[in-house]
Each structure stands twice: as C-alpha cells, then as structure tokens.
Image 1: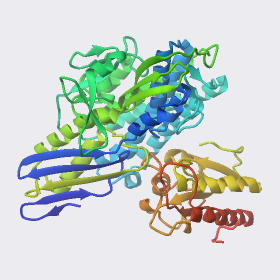
Image 2: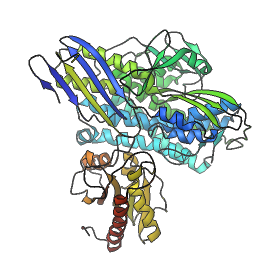
Image 3: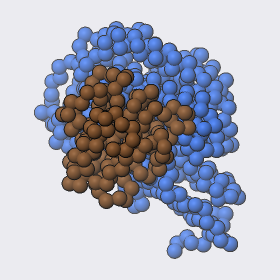
Image 4: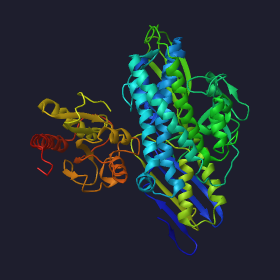
Length: 439
Length: 164
C-alpha cells in the first residue's frame, strides 16, 4: 500500500496477482530522479538443466514440460526439435502439422487467459477477473469459452490440457483419431468467431501513450507465421541459424536475482514475444487477419507495449484460423514416430512459446544420455526490457499519485505476461521514493 | 481434465485437486485414490490440476465435492468443510500450487459472479505443511486424508447436503 510523508513515498504490494511466478520489484526514486529498478525473480529452468544431465534423451520433452504449467507445449517442442537436430531425425509432414496444431492450442489457452483474466482488469479498472465479471459477464464468458477451445486442442493432441504427455521425439505416442479431429474443427470454427469478437473488443480499450525503441527478436520463416521453425531474426538486422544463438546472445548473472538476464551481445537488451513476432512476421499472416489487425488500430510495427493485448488477440485469431487450416487439410502420417539411431551429438532448437523465443541446446552421449542442457526461456530474455520499461514509465509519470503509478507499474509488468516461475505466484512490488536511497 | 470413469451426469462428482510432485499438495488426489478402492455407487471420481476454466466447465450443473490442499497457517492435517454456495473462499486459503494464478478460488468466485455455480459445491480442505518438490504426504496430512475419505464416503452415500 502507498505510504506518504513529506518527502518520501513508498508503494508496496505484498501480493500482486495476475503474473506467473515469484518475484519482487523494487523502484528507487529520489525526487524526480529514478534510481535503481530491479525485477528480482526466481527461475526454475536452472535446476531443470542440472536435473536433465544423465537422463535419457527421450525424457527431455516430459521433464521440461514441467517447467511451466502455462506453456508446456513450448518446452516440449523446443526439446523434441533440439533432439531431432542432434540425432538427424526427419519428421513427416503430418507430424509437422500436428505440432503446429498443438502449438495453436497453447497460444489460444495462454493468450486468452492473459488477455481476459490477467490483463483486461488493468485496462478496465478492476482488481481482477472476478470483480470484472460482475460488470462484464459476457466478456468474461467469452474469454472462458475461448480458453476452453484451446484446452480442448491441447488435451486432444497432448493427452491432457496441463502438462501434456503425448509428445515424443520424432512425433507423438498416439495419433489423433479422425473423429476427434472433426470435433476439434467444429470447436475451432466457433472459437474463430470468438477470437474475432475478442480483437474487436480489445480495440475498444484505452492504451496509455508510450512507445519505445528496442530490438525485437523472433523466429522468422519464409512462408509462415512462426511456431516451430525458422531463423532467429531481429529488427536490427540479425539473421542467424539457431545453431549460432550462443554466439550472439549471452546470459548475465546479476547479484539481486537468481534468474539470468539475457543480452544480445554488442547490442544490449531486446524484446521477445507476441509484439516481436508480429513486428517481424506481420506480412506472413493471412491478408484478412492483417486487415483485422489494422482495423483494430495496430500499426504495421507496434512499439507501444500496452498494445500487446491487441497483438495477443491477433495471434489468437491467427491460431484459431491456422488450426482450422491444418484440420481441414490434415493427412495422417504413416507413423506416429520414426526409429531413431543414437550417437553422440549436440542439438539446437528454438520455437515460439506464447511469451516468445524459447531456446534449447542439448549435448548427448553416444547412448543418448543427456550430458549437458541449456534452456533460455522468454522471460529471462525480456527481463532487461521489463526493467527498462518500468524505468521509462516511472520517469514519464513521476508526477502521478502513488496509487495510480503503482497501477501503471503493474500494468506495465503484465504487458510482458511474465512467466516467472511455475510453483507460486507472489510478486512483492515496492516503490521507494525520497531520501532512503543508499541507506 | 482426465475423467477416470465415464461421465455420469446424474452421479455426484468428486474432484481431487493437486500436484503429485508437490508433496502435501497431493492430498486431494490421495483422497480420490482411496475412494477409488471403495468403489462407491453413483460417484464419479476425477483428478484435476485446478485449472479454473476447465473446472468451471466440468462441474456445470453437477452435485460436486472438491478436495484440495490448503495453506492458511492452521496445524497440518486440519480439515475444513466449506459449503461454497454459502461461503466465499479467500484466495490465501488454497495452496497456490497451480501454475496459473488462476485456480479453484478463482473458478468458484468467477462462477459466483457469473451466476454459474453448480447446484451443490462443497470443499473439503486439508491443511498441508510441506509443498516442496517431491512425492509423499506429511504424517498429519496422511491421517487427515483417511478421515476425509470416510467423511466424503458417508456424505456421498447418504446423499446429505448438510455437514456430516
């Protein structure tokens, strides 16, 4: 709660809901100067990397899926592609399509939860979705129905909607039955309508006036909006194979955080996620979705992080449409998964998690045992960008009352839909104004 | 999530919520495991992660008993029976071991706000002590699980909607 004395204002939020994970934000202010801005978080993937050592390569998708209850598919996808890269496994076109399909489900689930339940209350002035539901029941019901459609996609293909278990290196343990896919197509046709309404509704929100210049980084594929494949590109001209990721990006350890901060070497902080994907791949969306995005007020390049809610709505619309395209054209692969020959190797992959680029690298021994693993999740890549944004927002709004500024800071954090950890949800936000710096 | 028996819309739905890899958080699942051995008539047993949207969908129009671990500072093993149609659920009561920041408490309160709660919704909360990584229940939680199994079996068996 905000506290004010003559020269000092302190804002502290002991329980900030509507973010994923455990962390603490600290903003120091001295008069009109903004001092240190820190987002202190705990990040489980570091433990997972150690836990993976000595395990069999086939276990990686199921173990890493446990890193996140919101984006397990992303972890499974990056894991299987990295293993296939290491072991030279070619996947059938039908498997490739099913992977895009299950990824559509995860984007729909994750983005819809964020848009309606976590982020919309910031724009409409409610403490949370429950309070919002009382005044806007039809909006919340639409969000729930759309999320349910995403759940259905993931549970049909993945075996269950949280921590799915059906993904394996080379393909799936069980292929979906034609009847299941017909049912899904019906669900997705309805979901696409809900997604159109979602974008139109999101366009009616008020967006704080704020733009920033930052390097956007995402996968890019010549023919499609990226999920599983592509080169790593940026708005400042980077264009590399994922094999060269480690040459261009590094993680830094800062004393105040157990999480690592990722930087683009020689460039600094960068931004991954829906806005980066949209800005770098907009022309690979179907024409009618590009038009719907423009009608909703999105520029060709969006630099206002508060409009990320619009970009997510565009991606949900795309995911519903892409799922329908896949379901209508689907031809079952001959095999659920190929035989795989083992040898010592290193494999790399990056896929587009709902929150952005997710990089995995594995070193395998000749019997397929994992000798080394490296996982760089989107939130660690965005951590500097979030702090930069908070600084910018506090600087521009220093005259704001403490309550309003606190609200704006929380909204700013949620622009990134940060997925901080997977076990608890506790973010302790503290803004310290006045003379206490350095004490 | 995974329905373990064929859905029977007329039966009572008993939902165990939790994560087996987070020690005492698995208390609700342990109750469902033991109830399965009792082979009660007219009862559908379901394990669930606590994800709110699918919970709301699952329990629509049903007679529902939910068993979940709680974390509220009470002694480990404390059992609380709450008629959720009568009482509001404070966020902090339920162990926040769902990774969604959007679990049972939100499902109940969203359902209430939307006028979409099921006709009967009773929570059995079992206070946990240890929600760290790993399997296995604390001793006091294990004893509470046994007791809740008995209470749920008799509540379902008698068809009573009042406290046993």
